[in-house]
Length: 244
Image (cartoon, rainbow, N blue to C red; front, side):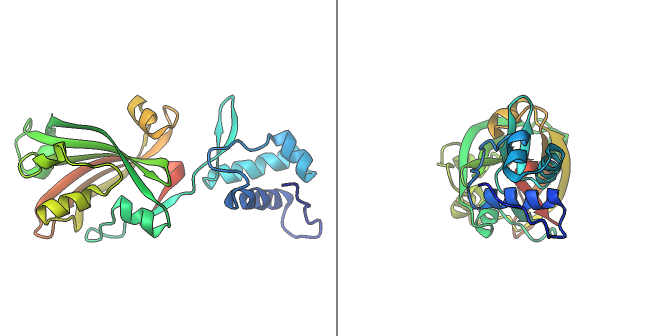
């Protein structure tokens, strides 16, 4: 992976080093989750100073190609997925987003349980606070890499089958659609904010506690405008981006 920099190029040295490392990542020379050489090793490989290498690494980390792990080194992150979030009547599932990015979608069930509706959920479903809802929590993966910790709430009535039906490596929207004939066609509300991974999110998504995550609160409606389900979703920011 030793490459000669172009001394006659108008591109600054750090940009040339950045481009070479990025090329190595994209062609698989540095696999996902592998550790790249140290700053000193890269500086010797490319014949530049450590300051130049450090800037290239910082830029690549900012672009989502690399992540620094304290006391361990610098590692390759998964390629970011892009999911479109254009308007309230344009719903794209995680499985569809994976397909659009040429990735294989996976799903692992974390839990299925009956919970009590809080104020926000009660208002969305039009039920009393404290009413029973069914919560299905899953980890969604793209090409085997955890990307989304999915927490979907459903009314108990009409959705009891979700307690037992297979929900591994599939779209829950498709499962519900095949059983009920109903699919989400719109989202309202849909709020996206930044949150930090707690112990549960860090464990399921395999990120450090405190890692910045996208946190989405989203209500899904079916074709008749009925409340389909409500999601509280955590996305790994270094592995995911939204096209808004």
